[in-house]
Length: 164
Image 1 (cartoon, rainbow, N blue to C red):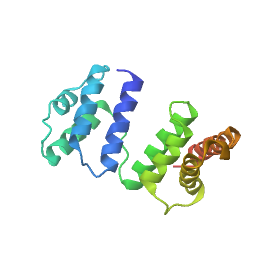
Image 2: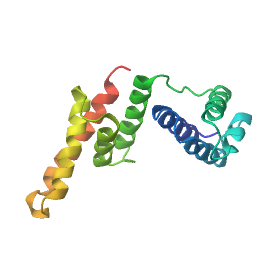
Image 3: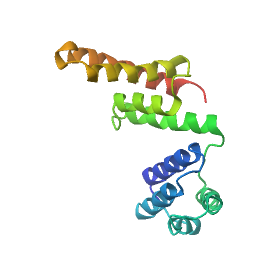
């Protein structure tokens, strides 16, 4: 069982839970990917074998079994799930696996404008990136995008430093 596969699967479960347990096929697909990556448990195999139109309750119960069998620490509640997903995105930015622009856009999509603190700076950065897109290339020197990228990385550091 690899840590990367485990973390990827946990993130898929958190995203699914954050979305209100819609799109059960997403966690079924994630279970298949997890099996291929080396994770294994009877409930994980059951989850990977569910049909696209499996009832939501069946998917939820099977996910609960997978979480228990694999000892996953799936956050409970919308706030805890939001913090978890935000932290994983911030880590991906700082590790270079996700661009600062993609992180800011993701935050705006997930949280909207009704936020405060560093999160507000992050969603406003999404607007800044968008304004760069709509202007002619010569209007914004590359340096201004680099500064914005650095600001988003600073926000990612700050978000990770906040207590959960």
